[in-house]
Amino acid sequence: MRISYSQCQAYQTCPQLYKLQYVDRIPVPATADLHFGSAVHEALHFMYDPQHLKLPSVEQVVEAFMAAWRARQAEVPEEQQQSYFEQGVLMLQRHYQSHSRREQGRYTAATEQFFSIPFDGEHRLTGRIDRVDVLPDKGLEVVDYKTSRRMPPQNVMARDAQLAIYRMAADALYPGREATTALLYVFHDYEMRLTQTPEFLAEKQDEIRDVIAGIQAQDFEPRPGSHCDWCSYRPHCQLYRAPVLPENLREVDIAALLREYADLYAREKSAGRRLELVKQEICQYLDRCQTERVEEGGYVAERRKWKRPAAWDEQRLRELLAPMGLWDKVTQVSSAAVRELLKSRQLPRETKRAVESAATYSEVQQLRVRPVASPEDEEIEE
Ligand code: SF4
Image 1 (cartoon, protein in one colour):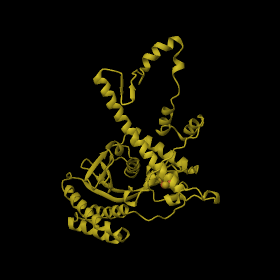
Image 2: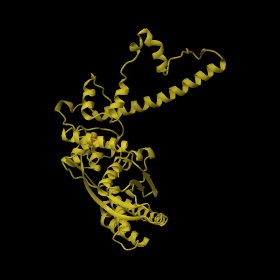
Image 3: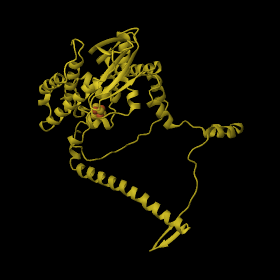
Image 4: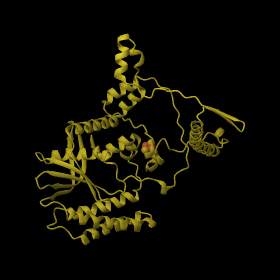
């Protein structure tokens, strides 16, 4: 099969999202951020296009952005159009300035470079690289543009699968050339350069294999989470479809139940925080009186103190208990550790399934009730 980074990312976020987007191909309107990102990408593509004999002027780059933005702005809510426009012009002017400081001898070899490279024999990895630069030492730098305001922490960027795929593409397209990768956050005018180790690439390849196996097995279970809040496919998702209301349920005032639950939950949380503060103040009072008991106003407080282990020195425990044959009594499979292992993507898909089937399951119901978010509250993914 052919698979791109965007498809991998969609599947890893939520298999149901992948299905709605790439299997059912349900059309959804592009977000304002997406239109804005495309216009900035077009302007940068124009700026770095290697077919130009010389670098276009900053005015020409801004003009390219304005033309791309004009073609799209009708799709963006009117009250946001001006701020997106101004932000785009500012970003590009700032980027143009820092471009003039880039090292001598560096030049762009390609922009918007399409690739389709073999993966594991029967599959192909596809995509489009924003820019490929040749460095003064003749090495390559593969650059991907990001136009969102949000910049993830460096350790998250460093583990980005997108750049791993681009690195594999660069190795295949330019054999024998040393390639590094970079994420350019245009809004912040910050470029983070990354070099992928063979181990990291192997780990990302395993993740891609895992995704391919899931898609081929048609495993499209919804994976709900905070990403559902900005998911454009929510109206089509099996988890969010309006429930079919049987006749005899019409007398249940579900709106009142939801309101009451959300209200009680909020009060319980704030009472919990206040309870902890009041407890600390009473304990401080007892400390200052050097007592463990106080009686006032018809109430009595008595304090008991004891120590409970927070962590064990495992090696020391083993030395003590193993000779007595008691070590096995205290070592148990830690459910949390197994869950971490399953989440870590270190296991091949089949082993993962086998490990999952080695557990017995009891049903847990988690209920989260909160006010429905207004569109302004939504986080938008680029
Ligand atoms: S709403 Fe959530 S669970 Fe449904 S498809 Fe979107 S991300 Fe997946």
